[in-house]
Amino acid sequence: MGLLDLAEKIKKHPENYRESCKFKTLGMLFAKTSTRTRVSFEVGMYQMGGHAIYLDWEKTNFTLAKFEDEVAVLARYCDILMARVFEHDSIIRMARASSVPIINGLSNDHHPIQSLADLLTIREKFGSLEGITVAYVGDGNNVCHSLIWACSHAGVKCRISTPRDYNVHVPLPKNSFTWYETPEEAVKGVDIIYTDTWVSIGQEAETKARQQVFRPFQVNANLIAQASSRAIFMHCLPAHRGLEVSDEVFDGPQSVVFDQAENRLHTEKALILKLLGIEAW
Image (cartoon, rainbow, N blue to C red; front, side, top):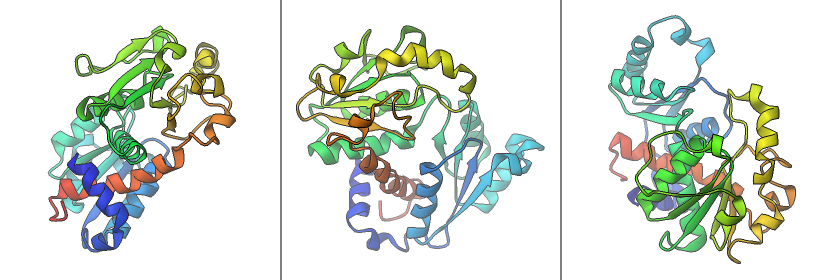
């Protein structure tokens, strides 16, 4: 809640934080492609008076040297590090090898920076997180995992509906969500319907099979109609229109996807300040 409170302050008065990260440097390591993660972190550091360095994994010596050695060197140069990786173990290994804070910018198992933006968006739209129910429909992937974690911390009720063979696959807090066999059951009366791509980075070979399995899980007007009359639609982006979500929902009045994307910037600024122990916290 403290992070969300700070993010709100930063969003309302960014000018108050223009020198918060003066002479601070964020090192950003990318093994996966990115739009929102790279731009929001880079812009965020710039707007707070700091600097961000983009490192493409394939164009660094992470491809040659011992992983932990490269992390240790980056930690000598940078004040804080962020990494967008495949295996979650890479984040764990970075944390062990680094003398500075490590931010998980995304791994195959978790996407925590997205869930912070999700909570801020929900709180903005409903005025509070109390009494809110979200239904996640689609693949039980990293976004789903972190959404469940975030909701469990924030007191938000979480329902999920996934194909049985594509359910969540990491340890999660006990009783943190309820699984439903069909999307129609999951979304009845909920305040939020959330979905993500059916094919994540690294799963491209499964595209045809996944599209067939997930077709009944598309978020469309018929599904939205079964939620609460005040329901909103959320997606972490990028969206594959006509697959996990129809155009009429994505572009419709209940969609808050671009507000959600913008909030990545504000919550990441708050996270950086918190991890660096900067007084603005």
